[in-house]
Image (tube, rainbow, N blue to C red; front, top):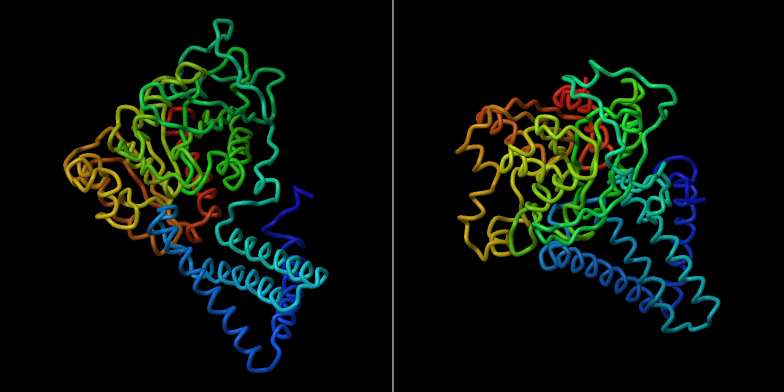
Length: 434
């Protein structure tokens, strides 16, 4: 059951039908909870007012007070949240006048069905959880313990590109493997969750080729595993490997936020030292524990939304570590809604330290002739298209070898996943793999 698709097929249709029936139950209970037509109208109007107010208040607190979700969302998201709030109100209000347990339970079950349907509609907007297993964090991948990088591992001589000296050995796995590991933070002190790692088939050859590295960063809110579930990372990389004799980059997805709703803005600030973690701790761990090409020209950083902005930040602040980047639907600069709020939350209102690390400011004052990048965005992503175009223009002016791509879609995982798939051949060439 957990593997049933949530975004297509029969399950969403059944859930929608059940929600319509449950809504009818809730409306009937709510209407007849009043003793007269006048009181019934007041009850319904009260429920509508309460649910609308709750939606507005919760949204305001999440975006402006708790700073959980700095980006605005599509109007449909707020509509579905409001519908869920209305269902909860319609289940609770009749309990005051009718406390019979069977009817109370019926109302609560009906509300739960409507809330589930609304949640899946929000899920459909962003395409985050393809299955229930993904939503529960129990999605299944071909997981292995992280192979040890010890003296017994034979390593092929360096080649440029890697494919020029690669011959498929016998019994090479047909697919890559996923692994999970903690990446400590001795330099930054950043509190991070486990990283997710993709190892292509060629990684399990004997001897191993020195493969390039792609560091991918998830969005906010989010987790590193989002790239595996919603982003179809394993499937995308396996498809590329199958077309290239088992070769693909080693992909490491570190935790760039510290928690589901954490937002350190990929900076070193009072909100956490995310920049040092991703530019120093993570690369040091990769070089120590994974068999990869340690030449920075074989390394890239990429990400989506928050992660796309972060990739641009790392590429402009640390071109010696990440001379290649993939910015998918990222903003032009890190932010918590507006510049004033961002400065207050990061550098006590002082603009100077922010300007010293802000990508567009760096691109105006520095040249990056050795850097390359891809900027990808959904054509319907009205909040981000302008930023992506500005970033592309700024990188071109700063001497970067960059290109720009708009894909059909908006600010959702369908664009994010497709963006990685479209740019993977370019990355493989840029990183000296093929």
